[in-house]
Amino acid sequence: MAANAALRTGAFMPNFVSVILPTYNRSHSLVAAMNSVLIQSHKDLELIVVDDASTEDIESVVLGVGDTRVKYVRRAQNGGAGAARNTGLAHATGDYIAFQDSDDIWLPNKLERQLQLFVSLPEHVRVVTGAKIVYYGPTRIMQAPPPAGPLRIGENQLVQLLMENRVSVQNALFQKGCYPGTDWFDECASANEDWEFAVRLARHTTIYEDLEPVVLGFISADSISMNPRRELIGYLRVLRNNRDILQNLKVERSLLMLEASRYFLKLGKTATARKFIFASFLDNPLNIRFLVSPAVKRAVRLVLGGPTRARSWLKARKDSRRPLKQKTRIADDDILSSCEMVRDGTNL
Image 1 (tube, rainbow, N blue to C red):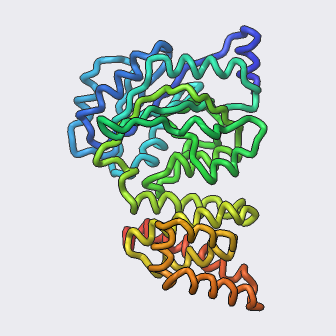
Image 2 (cartoon, one colour):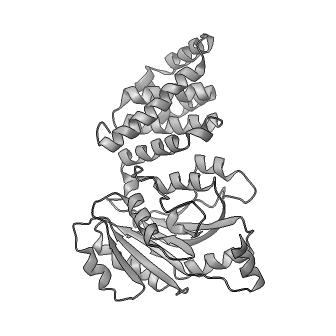
Image 3 (spheres, rainbow, N blue to C red):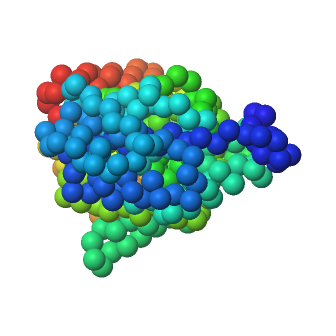
């Protein structure tokens, strides 16, 4: 796009940033999250706080900050982080889009650093993402994503993102129009919605990953990432929404299905876990090597009755004349039906 070129040549370039902050309750941490946006060294911004039908008086908390750059939007019905972010996108007027969470803290130069990075990047790069320092408690701190294996311009970012999410939306800055429309997030994905979006995003633009931390994150007891049911739904949505490309990426699809089976087991859904494990092995028989992992070995023994039975099943299936595609399709149907169960709020 001409935007990056304008910055490089010194021409005028609008740099108004719309920051979208969804919240459900969390009035105890909201002000700190808001203030970390409002004290940014880059001042040309609007902060859109989307109240996802909280039971707490979030409006008073938001308006009490007393900054004219703050907009308060309340949703009539709770829809989750993805739905709240989409609501914020519909109200955004900026040239750039950024996202904050109600329990995270931005470092003061986040926006300035990322806007400056666009100056030296190719025009087809329309997203810049950074890192987050995550506090899991007083003694456990780590950087996410880890510094090893960053996204690189010119490599297959789509395949890499299918295997590992390296785009946490709080860490990123998006040029407006990098993705079509304002419904960026899958509202059925109650966890991993940023990962699911990142995979679809990579089909439309190139992402630059900067290893410098720009956000401080805190894992709390009510964090979505602590909920295995919601984590499973995220995996199912990644599989469902990318069925077209995963048809030609069977190794990646097999690993995603194997990971989904682990969450089904955690939730006691042994029959569905079995189908996902079988389909994973059919996509990529080499997945049998994961039986050497003690955790996976225990899970497969529970589902299949032991690794010997699993190997025997694979051999018998290989000798069968029935097409593998027919059996693999069962997993696709399970993905679709599981997503329907999510909408109905049953069985998961």
